[in-house]
Amino acid sequence: MSEQQPGERMDPGENDEARVLDPEEYTQKRRLRDVFDARRRVAEWEREARNLRMQQGVNEQQERHYILSAVQSYLREIEPMMLETYPEIGEEYWKDVDLGSVEIPPPESLAPENAGSVHSEIISVEEAAEPQQASLAGIGSLLGRDVWVSAQFEARVMKRGGDGEVPEVGTNTVLLPRRIIMKAFRQANVFLSEVGLDLDPDDERPMNNLSWGE
Image (tube, rainbow, N blue to C red; front, side, top):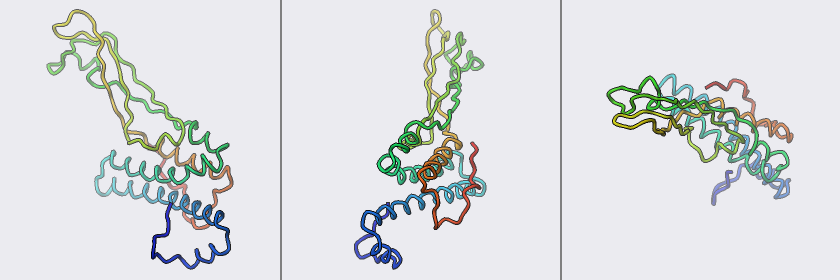
């Protein structure tokens, strides 16, 4: 949330507003403006990320990090409203709302087709590892995380010079899908609508041109 710095002049409109509103109401209104500012930045950063990807060759990981950072900033602004001002509604969005799942395939080192190669000590995969589904719940789960989702796998394999089947463990990592990041963004907007705070008088730009895909 933005704060006025020492020696910084207050906007004349804000000064008039501060005289009319009591301190608590004024603080709440400033906090709501910070929320809407952060929401607008998501749209701006999402468009900028797409442009960077198409025009400047920014890779998928960088693009995803760019979008996730914008959504995380929005969620930090809205968190007090969800958990302190309207906890009876906000806690479900913050902790429980379904954001979807990510399929993580086993690592290539445990893939049956790669067994027996000159670069692998694994002769054969007797019991292959299955893909895993990583589910994400609660928009708060996006805070404090990066753009990667990992899972650990175990397969039963035969190794060179070994005696029988042995367990082999491996880890694989995939990018957090854009659809999950943007679903968290949409759910935060739904929360604002549910508590009657979805109309931003300063925001004249449509939000329906955002990309919700992978």
